[in-house]
Length: 164
Image 1 (spheres, rainbow, N blue to C red):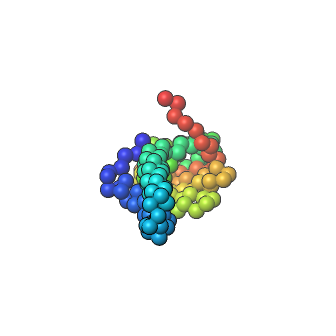
Image 2 (cartoon, helix red, strand yellow):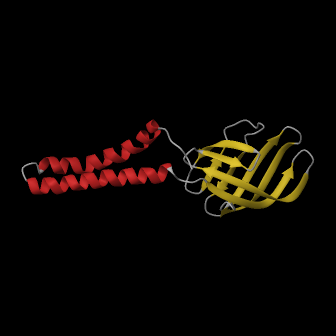
Image 3 (cartoon, rainbow, N blue to C red):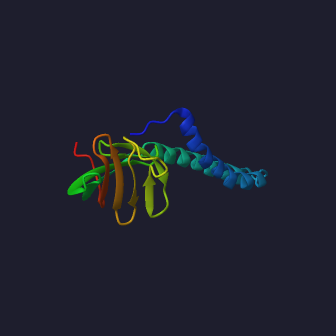
């Protein structure tokens, strides 16, 4: 479960609260002479504030997405390829991708179809780079090791959940 500091939660809450105020405040200001309508406008603003707070709690507690990927892992320097399974953990709140025990990299792009991670980084140990197609599940991951150099994984990922 992701934990956020009060300042991070406030930064996430302010846009929702401002949009609720912007939508309802001009209407309620125009109805200032009609107490009954003003009271109902106030209820709507209160409900929007409560709804925004609840949605922020849901976003702040979003669990990382877990994937199991099956495909080919190739040791580039030895030109050896074998069937392999790789675990990906994607935390969109923290904007990072963890590739098994190989390391973590920042999310670099989140277009509608392909999520990329670590692409702007020079190849380095502990910072995998790659991409995951959000529709087909096709993944390409590049891993740099101290002993064998670069590994390349190409395969297909499926959502999974923790066993325990």
